[in-house]
Length: 244
Image 1 (cartoon, one colour):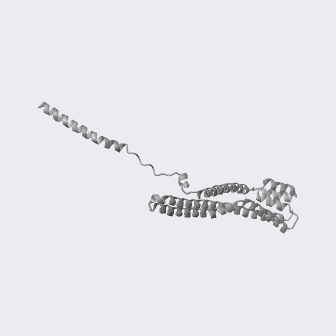
Image 2 (cartoon, helix red, strand yellow):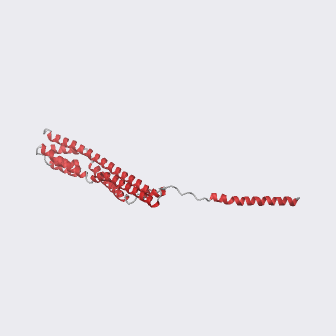
Image 3 (cartoon, rainbow, N blue to C red):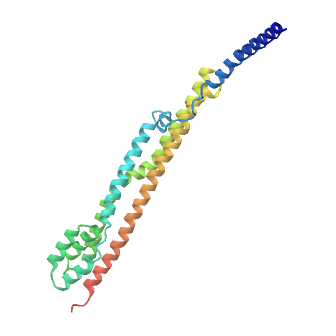
């Protein structure tokens, strides 16, 4: 009886061992299954899929950023307002000290001061001549501030055109790949679609940046021009005041 029980126990243990051995590889396979790669793409890799048309777009972007930063610094420096400049000039003119008044304007060296210096240098002439000299000096200074602004204007116009050229190239590539592969599977047309969409988006982004920079800087220049007009009127009013 005892031998029968032991034989039955050994049979059950052997069956359990075989079951565990059969299950173990499956469990191990589940635990060690390779993870799927993340569906991520770097910005550089995405831009590179746009093809060679992204090179001129990158050049236009860098050029636009350089012009915007350089012009912003120049215009900000020129827009600094000297609250006591006109009052000091008025006092010097009333005292007959025109040389010091001109020296003060030269030391300040802003478009406003340069315009005033031209007006002071013509005191004694007619008001029309003084006004014309100040207008000419003011226009010259504003033109200097607008230097290279045309680059932003042109970039805002042609960057989307470069993007459109890239779109056309991408469409051509799509049809070429379809003709070679003789199928329209997504793997075949994906390269052309990448180029088509990335170049379109890149051209629009560069164009928008240049467009915003151009109009923002122009607004700063227009604000300065309006202030210079007010300063000119105030200066002419000083000259028209009766002598004490």
